Amino acid sequence: MNIIELKYFIYKAHLPAPIKTSKLLITDKSGIIVRLKNNEGRYGYGEASPLPNFSRENIKEIIEIVQRIEARLKFDEYIDDTNLLRFTNNYASLNFGFEQAIYSLNTPAEYNSILLNYIPLNFLIGLRSDNEVLASVENAVENGYKTIKLKIGERSFTEDLSLIKKIRGKFKDILLRVDVNGAWNIKTAINNIRMLNPLEIQYIEQPVNGLNELLSVAEKVETPLAPDESISSLSDAEFAINSGLIDYIVIKPMNIGFNDSLKIIELANKNGKSVIVSSMFESPIGKNALFYLAAKTKHNYAHGLSINVKMEQNLLEQEAIISEGTIAYNGKLYPYPHSIDQLFE
Image (cartoon, rainbow, N blue to C red):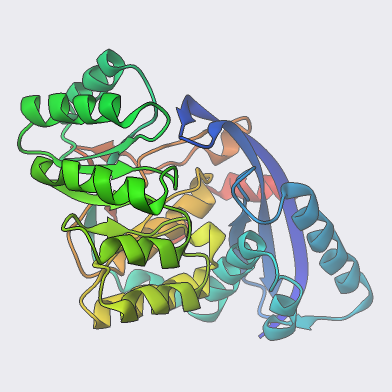
C-alpha cells in the first residue's frame, strides 16, 4: 500500500487527578495524532504519545522523525507502508501510531468483526493516604468496579500491608491488584509477597526491576506475579510466556507497538495466558486502539484503561463512556466525528 500524504497534530492533555507511583508523578502529557492518506484516498489515524520518564523516547524526538517523513513525502510521490515503518522502528510510541493508522488502512473490514463487547476495567488508585485510598475504593465499588489496582512501594511495607488488610477486610469480594513499579529488591519482594499471600491478591505487578529478577521471585512465591515495565518487546513477552512461571502479562502497547501487541495477545491466547492491556494515558485516538486490543484477549479480567484524560483541544473529547466498571466496545477503531480532520488543516 502506498502512502501519499502525512499530516500530524500535537496535543496536550491533563489527567483528571495526579497519579503517583513509587517512581513517577504523572499530571499531564503531550502526544501527536498522525493522519495517513493512501493512494485510494482513504485516511488512517494513529497516536504516538510517549510518557515522560517512562518511555525510551520523548515527544521532541518523535516530532523530529515525523517531520522528516513529512519532508520526504514532499519530494517523493509516495512511500509504501513497509518503508514508512523503517523510519519508526527505534521509537515504540511512533511505531504504535503509524502501525495503528496503517492497520486500519490495510484491513478496514476487520474492525467490524468484533461484536459488541463489554470490556471490564480496573480502577487505578495511586499513592495516597489510607483514608483517601479507602474512600476511592468505596467510590469505585459503588460505581460498579469489581477490580481495584493499588499502587504501593513508596512507604514502608508495614504501612502498605496495613492498608491492604483494611481494604480486604472491608471489601471482601473485589479483585485486588497491587503494583509496586519495581520498588523492591529480590529478597525484599519474596518476604513481602509471602506476607501478602493470605490477602488473596489477584496478582502483584512488577515487584522488582527486570524480567529475570521477576522470574526469580516467581519461583519462590505462591501469589501470581505480572510483568509490566519489563515487557517492552515481543521477545520479552515470549520469554515470560515460555518460562511457565507467569499467568498474567501487563502490556502497554504504546511502549511496544501496535503490531507486536497483537502478536503478544495471540501468543498468550494460544498458551492460556492472560494479557492485561494497560494505558499510558492516551487521547481518545490511541485509547480506542487499546480497546480494540483488549477485545482481542480471551479472558474476562479487567484491563487498565479507566483513566480518561482531559484534552486541551475539545475536538478530541470522544472517550468511551464507562458504566458499571466496563466500557461497551463495538469493534470500530475510529468512531471519531468529522471535525477531527479540522486538526490537520
